[in-house]
Length: 284
Image 1 (cartoon, rainbow, N blue to C red):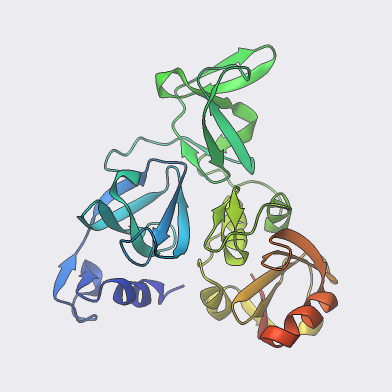
Image 2: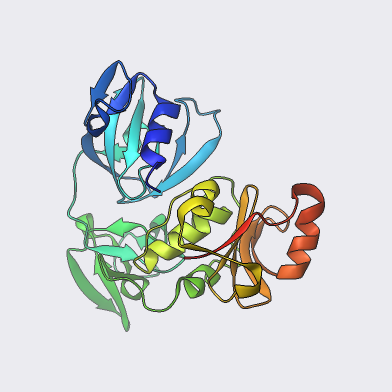
């Protein structure tokens, strides 16, 4: 993960470099950026300020960024969590930092117009989204967290910010079973192979790079195939899967187009004819 900022900054905007890279990276201008916060449920991050450009990753409500440049309705940002850099619509990022208190722990949940599940929904949120809770209320035995403006979310779908979920990250990843596969996806509405690993690890208090190549290079320690156990990672060129146990993989994949379980040997045989054999194995 250590070389991610250098590589991504130069790839996206060779004319600008982050202030700490002055003297290391050759650039026409240097910027330190201004703080910002994602203010919509999910925003797609692109390599160019073009809605037709493919999606590299996604950021969730409440995630913080540094806005490095803004023009033409687009903001060039760097995510605080993993240093990922790219373009997002400028109105998806707010300069107002709200003092977020809780993070969504359910794969998906709703914000209601008030503290009652029979009321209209305002937004749908993914696991990992962050909200500012200002109060609590119980309605017919269900506890709600209240947000600004009287909106509400189910309280047991949330935990305090900075309080990692208990259990291993594999159990968290398994909660996304049958979630649709989405290239660049990083949410409970659609997710890709490396996004599944990053998001589930994040929820248990661990950090991981965003992309498969970066995870294969530096996430945890290298092991052999004979050492594989629950929680270990299997890499192919452009793909990564989690060992659910010694014989079964859990992965977001373009074959089933969702998060699925698959036998290790079956996956190696299926993937091998097109992409070759696994390129490595790591223990996070």
